Length: 158
Image (cartoon, rainbow, N blue to C red; front, side, top):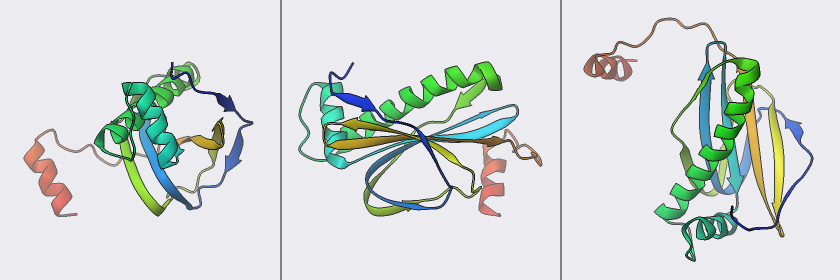
């Protein structure tokens, strides 16, 4: 679809410890009856601009809102494909809205400490990491009320 020279490299596991990064990371959560998880796509700013340029048929000299949106959509597509395949084993899953973070020298960390499956994808001299972390769903205490003002009160008073 992007007409870029992608090469999928061997997958490996990574602990939930924090990892420092530069560039962009798109995060997409998913949840089902018995599992919760997160998928992510991390790449450098130049690769994000190249990919976004192919998506939108234009050039991007730097990261802007269109690049952030394109990488969010790519993360949504990739993790969405994972979701469809995983549903055969895990049952129905729902996705969250993608969140994209951009910057230099930022850290990400999974609080649960679970293992991530990492699939590096080379594109020329650059690389994009696609990661997925799945864990059993923790016990749910109580659902938030449907009334949005009541839910906001709960958030603000927590």
